[in-house]
Picture 1 (tube, rainbow, N blue to C red):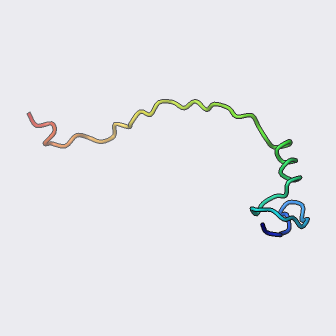
Picture 2 (picture 1 turned 30 degrees about the vertical axis):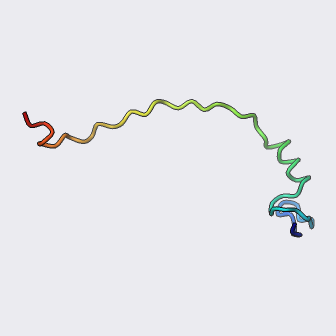
Picture 3 (picture 1 turned 90 degrees about the horizontal axis):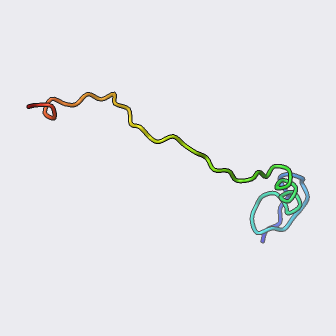
Length: 59
């Protein structure tokens, strides 16, 4: 445990990790927290900007 000033409100707190104090975390979760959502991405299609070499196209 370490004692430090909360970077958000400036009060002295004793926490295991550096960051906002407990009340600030609760307030941030209530005001800034969002529901998780699923992100859909398009399938990867590689670009065809490379020409085949002469050995690969040799008949």
